[in-house]
Length: 324
Image (cartoon, rainbow, N blue to C red; front, side, top):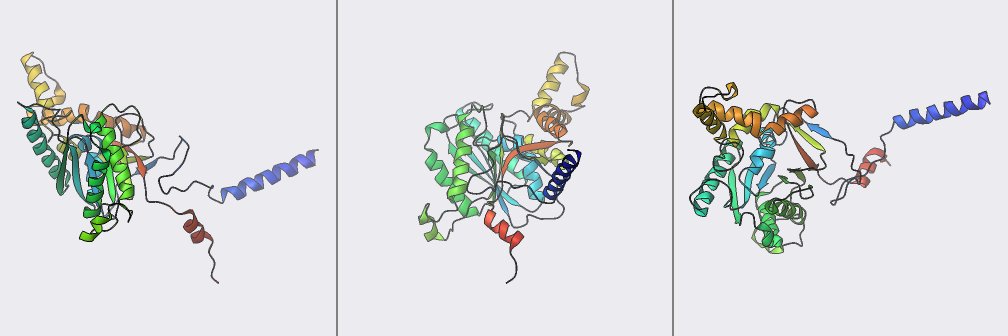
């Protein structure tokens, strides 16, 4: 019995050692499919030296003027620093949020803020689609998708950054309508059968193959982007949204309010500019600090990332093909 037990242990150890020399079998992601597990591997994306993404183009897509700077400003700055060129697509007319004397006044102020956000982030152009704020779910999503398909092809977009189409507990219809239009447009823009009239005017099938999806609520996070080197730039971009959003001039307002009450916060510094920066870092963007610490970073943004399609067949060929 002792000899048999020794042999069984030896065989088990040998099998374990052999398995350790090979990568475990995994699911390959392609065609919109992926792991069915809720437990996913999280990749930390750090700053890369040089310009590894030179020649690539990204589209940062937001329903409202403050979405990209709040949730993805650091990632936009990082990717542009690494060689990307980019555009900003603003889907709604931003008529329902911010301070102004009328709807038209609010729209104009938010539009100007959005242009300044794009400039501060380094995005080359802003495209305004002007769908009705808070009411995008009343609009045909097929129309929004068609316009995005055209833009993806016209600008040769390789990567998109936007809301997660499958995030949980999203109450704002503008967010989930934008997200779902983006997701389906990425797929259909690569098809030669969708909107073939585009091709008569020089466009070709082309759609984004990388997607960074953020969310306000719970989501399946598999990508953490280290934005520690870009936090100052992200704060600067958020300060451009003075009409709406959690940053803008709110630090200066708090400083003046406290002064009127005979109080002060050392955090807010000695002038309005310092107050706005400190307020934005400490309060408006506190999630970046909290999320960074969860992964051993100073500041981070988190995403559900979808990369280029993989081929199980080609991977097998690469590993096992032999010369004739």
